[in-house]
Each structure stands twice: as C-alpha cells, then as structure tokens.
Image (cartoon, rainbow, N blue to C red; front, top):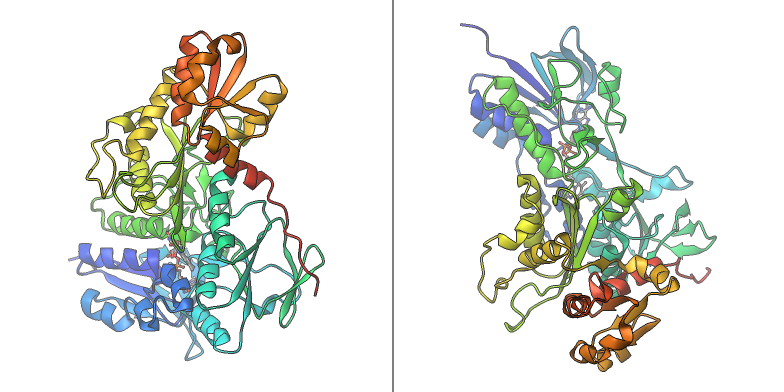
Amino acid sequence: MSRSSKTVIIGGVAGGMSAATRLRRLDEAAEIIVLERGGYVSFANCGLPYHLSGIIENRSSLLLQTPQSLASRFGLDVRVKNEVIGIDPVAKTVTVVDLDAGSEYVESYDFLVLSPGASPIIPSIEGADRALVLRDIEDVDRAMSALSGTVKTAVVMGAGYIGIEVAENLHLRGLAVTIVQRGAQVLSALDSEMASYMQGKLEAEGITVLLQTEVSKIHSTSVLLSDGTHIPADLVFSSIGVVPETTLAVNAGLTIGARGGILVDDFQRTSDPSIFAVGDAVEKVDAISGDSRLATLAGLANRHGHAVANVITGQHAVPASAALGTAIVSFGSVTAASTGWTEKALRAQGREIRVIHSHPAHHAGYYPGAETMHVKLIVDPHSDLILGAQGVGGAGVDKRMDVLVTAMFAGLTASSLAQLELSYAPQHGSAKDPINMLGYVNRNIAEGLTQTVQWHEIQSLLESGSVLIDVRTEAEHDAGHIPGGICIPVDTLRDHVGSLAGKNVIVHCQVGQRGHTAARLLSQHGIQVSNLDGGYLTWQAGSLASHSQPTPLKGK
Ligand code: FAD
C-alpha cells in the first residue's frame, strides 16, 4: 500500500483551516500539519471589531476552535506560534521557527497550501508605531488594553468596510470618533451617491467624517492632518487597506501576479504544481472582466480552501468560480452592500452601461415598520446582464443583495428579475418585490418604453436647453427641489402638453415612479422626454456626495 500523502498548510484561519478540515473529511489517512504564526487558529477575524464595543462580550467567543479541538475532531496536527520562514520547492520542505522554543526545524511535504492572508497597511508617517490595526486576536488584545485606559477620542484612518466597523464599535464604547479618509467619499466600493447615505448616517450618529484628508503625523494624544490642523486622538486605528502576504511565495520563486497577489490557476495551484495558495494572499479572477483582481473576503478564502482539498485528493475538483467581490457593512441601522462593478469604474473604462436607481420600501408600505432602501443596478445594455449592484438602507438590504448576487452568478438578465417568484407576505416583502421592480424598470428602458438620465447629467442637460419638470406635488417641490426645475404635478400634466411641444423635457418625481408615468404620458403626445433615474432622492444624494468637501476644523 502506498504511503498516505502529507500536506502542510501555512496559516490556520479562514482559508487554511477550511483546506485542512475538508482534507480530513475526504482522506482519513492523510497527514495534515497546520503551521500558524500567531497564538490562535480558526478565530473569527470578521468578529474582531465587535469585541471593541462589547457587542461580542467574551473574547472566548472569537475563538472558534483550538489546536486541541481540531486534533480530537479532525486529527489535525495544529502548531500555533510556529512561523514558516522559508520554502524549498525542490526539496519540498519548509523551514519553521517554533516561536516559543526559539528553535528552528524543517518539515517535509507532498503538498503545501499557502493561506498566509494579507497584512494591514500602516502609513509610513511619524508616530505610526502608535497606530493600532485589527487583523488577529493579538491585535484585538492590544486594542482592548489601549481602551482600558482613559481614552476619549479616536481617529480611524480609512473609511472602508473595516474602518466603518471599527468606528462604530469605538463610538458605541463612548469615544468621540473621527474618520479620516483620503478619497472623496466613504466606502469606495460604492458609487458616491450610494455611499453618501452611509456618510449621512455616520455624521447623524456623531462621527466626524473628514474626506480628502490624510493623517500626516501621529503624536502622543493627537494627530496632524494634511490640512495642517491637529485633532485629538487618544487612539489611532489604521484601516487603510491590506497587502497580500507574499514574502514566502516570492522567496520560493512562485509567480506573483500584476496585482501583487500569488498567481494561481483555476484549481488554486501556484506556478509550482505541489504548492497551492488560497485566501487574501492570492489573486482571483474577476467575474465581470475576467481579469486578475484582489478580493479579500472570508467567503472566497473558505471556498477556495475547500476547493484545494478536493484537488489534492482528486475528488470533486471543479474550477474555482470567479469573484464578484460581494461585501456588506452596517453602521447602526444602516447597511451598505455592493457586488460586481461600480458605475464609476465602468465609466472610467468607457463601458456603455444602463444604470437604475430605486428607493423601495423593504416590505409592503401599508404594513407597519416599512423602511426605505436605496438600490442601484448596473446593466450591460447589449447583453442585459447585471454588471454590479449596490444597496443601502435598513432591513432587507442583505436579502436583496443576495438575490442579485445569485442572479449574477446564474447569468440571469436584468429583465428576468421581474419574473422571479420571490417569497411574499406583507411583513416580508411586496407582491412586486424591490427585485421585481428593478426588472420592470430595466425592461422598460431596454425596450425603449422610457428613457432615463442620471443625476450627474442634469446640470449639463439644463445648460444645453432641456426643460426640467418636477411632477411631484407643490408641497413636495417646496420642501426641496432641483434648481431650474418647474413644478407641474403629474395629475395636471395633460393640461400642459401643448406648451411642452418641441422641447427636450426631463421629468422627475421623488423616486422615479411618477416620473415614469409622466414620461409615458408626454412621449405618447410626441414630446421628447426622459425620466430622471431614481428621482429627486438620487439627485439629492449625488449632489450631497459631489459637494462633500473637507470639513473645516478647529485648530488646536
Ligand atoms: P487569514 O484568515 O488572515 O489567515 C492567515 C493566517 O496565516 C494568519 O493567522 C497569519 O498569522 C498566518 N500566517 C501568515 N504568514 C505565516 C507564516 N509565515 N507562518 C505561519 N503562519 C502564517 N471578510 C468578509 O467577507 N466579511 C467580513 O465581514 C469581514 N470582516 C473582516 C473584519 C476584519 C477586522 C478583518 C481583519 C477581516 C475581515 N474580513 C471579512 C476578511 C476575512 O477575514 C479574510 O478575507 C479572510 O480571513 C482571509 O483568509 P486567509 O486564510 O487568506 O487569511
């Protein structure tokens, strides 16, 4: 009988541990060694921010498994505080430092799986050694110890998903939090008008958001900003992004991709056939463009770890699915989620796109507790396939985003969203669910029944002579309107058809629905008309986003 195979796995958290446990389920005889630099394996990285506030009260809740529990259930040889410092792909060995013993040893392998993750970026500025990061249990311990002193103020560098989670939890702990963001909006994975709802929520809850600003220097209790002002900062967190951990791979001569991650094939195999790599350290294939991309997401790490075990055992191996980059974050009652490409990224590539904004209630409006959500769909007008989607709002955003992700994965057209038979009772949805509505709106545009314009096109259309008609009621118009718009409520629009003949008309309402009715009315009278996609609400969100300027600060 041939010797059972020996697999060494570097990194014992998301990707690494998925590979290890799946491998054991497929091969009871395999020798499986997991080498982890840190003191813990299989911990809940995604839960770390929530321990800062005490939402996840017990530190032990973050520790999902121990080397002992993994040994008993899965027969794994898990070695924490064992750092791999080198790979010899010819000898098929790794050199390991036992960090407690301070000794070095060599371990052989038949297969090697790299899942070393990505390291948080800390800016190279004076005082950066005071910046906290959040990647592992040791980091959260450092942060908790810093929080145990007298701390009142915190600066969070970066307004991405982790930055917002850290800010929320420090805020819940009672700290005055300032987010300092280099870009012109929070959550760069969203388009600006969608991200502005999240910025509004952050500010409404008392978080200071400084855009187009950087931290230039970290002092002992304050930071110096790029505009020359100082703000108090008992704590400073760096959440400005991560870089794939590729040192081992580079030194072993493995191929690194153009995005800086380890290059793997569809079966997670690196340029060395005995070495696999998964998780944040590797490049993925972008589901929309087919190009290489980085996507640092737990679901992908877990899925690809699972896939590697299939390949190693030669069982159930299927090519890895491409990455959409689906992500979600909440701040209090507001959730923001995105998948696929943004409008800004597609426009920057010169892609022709169809864009739809809608603002539905998350369940039937007549049933108590309906909350408004903001949804955006970006569609290829030629194939009608969905290229990206974003959602911001309260309840129900996650559910709609997951339906859209499923539709994208399955290759459904945007118009076919209208036909999905989704679960409905008044407290759960609507007979025409927000997803169905996106399908209807898309089909109306695709079939030429209605034309739309985007919020960012209004200004130039008005300058070139278009007439903007607000078809909401006068009360709604008076409460806030787009400059240059004339109020003609939809119910009286037929009386004005004569005066609009021959003009290029843009109609808008609050969210786009009455605008669509108005556009249909006018176009049937031969008037050239477009409806403002997403109505006043989208225009307002977009205008707020484009006018976001660095907030003036008081000097110290
Ligand atoms: P990791 O899980 O980071 O594991 C890598 C391990 O390898 C580390 O423990 C490291 O110590 C070890 N290692 C590295 N080098 C060596 C070496 N030389 N020798 C031995 N061991 C080594 N994703 C989501 O999808 N949703 C979320 O809500 C979400 N929230 C997050 C919140 C936070 C605070 C963080 C940090 C991440 C979050 N992520 C989230 C991302 C997600 O955690 C990662 O995508 C996922 O953990 C990547 O898995 P991985 O196996 O590649 O790396």
